[in-house]
Image (cartoon, rainbow, N blue to C red; front, side, top):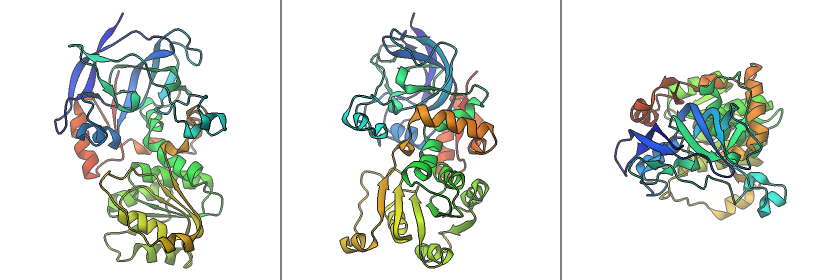
Length: 363
């Protein structure tokens, strides 16, 4: 039977979120319901709340989550009730052209649940990134759940569902950082600190963190940054990065801030022939003006990173194992543990840069 549970709903543009009762249907073919254990409060949820993504209100927020499979629908083979899983918003189809060419990270026909969750009035909800996990229970496609070792803390595991995976993958997959590389990360919030951790895991010898917030720079140092540049105190960020890299620039530069100014800083602080990765999502109104000749003369590679170019079935279990082995400090991303009723306050903390991640923990 359909279940009525509590969830965080964004009712309209500019309105505060509210904890409402929603109706979750029984899973249909290839669908599962997941009893949520923990869900991070992500910038993307804030974008949904503020109408940056689209206007398909009301939104069921939350996508950075872990939980336990409660029910499975017909045809589900990859999980069973009782499995501990991380929810992933990229569920590759295996049929589209990129998948057939062996590039599932570029899948263009991803799976989501067919049925809609609703308010108790019957009004359909739009789940954030097709998941909607700031809820006691959610309905997703079976391709949106990845089993991992249940020994991991649910609050830690869920962060791989979005922010931590994006930053780790920006270094490990998109940027392809290798042993001996020099790496600069511009913007060291949650995603940027994850990029620092990924660069360290990959064997970079020099990691430079850049930000205008001294608190974030201190956190980046804990994740492995050896050099810190406070951009609020430096006139020339590009020059500062080049000075730390023998005048050459960094082999890989990751822009985790997403502004035209930081884009240019990343581009020009990159070594000739180096790699530049944009992992932050710019606002739709931002514009960039660059001399075309500079892009030609500088050479190298420019890449945009979506979801860390991850393959959840491959990456989530491996990264959880690395964390449990003590080699990847994912627990440091959890700044505070909150309840569902605290999400609006968590958005304020996120805007002010007070936290890497607030995580709603559900019993």
